[in-house]
Length: 126
Image 1 (cartoon, one colour):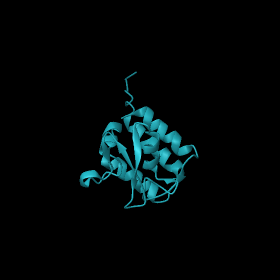
Image 2 (tube, rainbow, N blue to C red):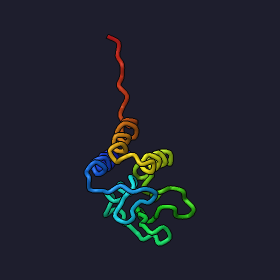
Image 3 (tube, one colour):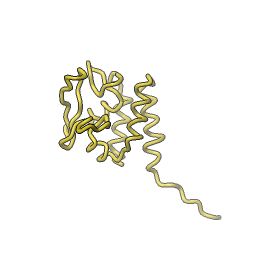
Image 4 (cartoon, rainbow, N blue to C red):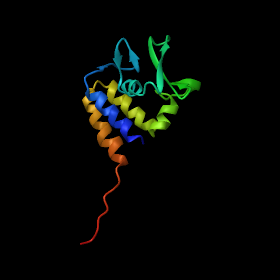
């Protein structure tokens, strides 16, 4: 997992720089939690118009979200680069779209996604 990017994501969610939206990565000046992640990935990726849903999708590594019948809400290339799973993304979407604030999502990322990557403590006999 890309720890520094994940920590940057948490900081961005807590920054107050993003107005929270739901059901779209980026639309009308609002971002969902995954949209914030995509936004901090610029210039490695870029926003592209999504005329069907009146918002923007994100392009990364030559791919865009939902390309080739993918159900991934961000480009699969970005998901794989970050070391996230489809279940991780589904959890982020569920938290965001249920109306919980970015602060809750940031804490969840720290406690679940980043904590899962910490090495386990070794217990030694005294």
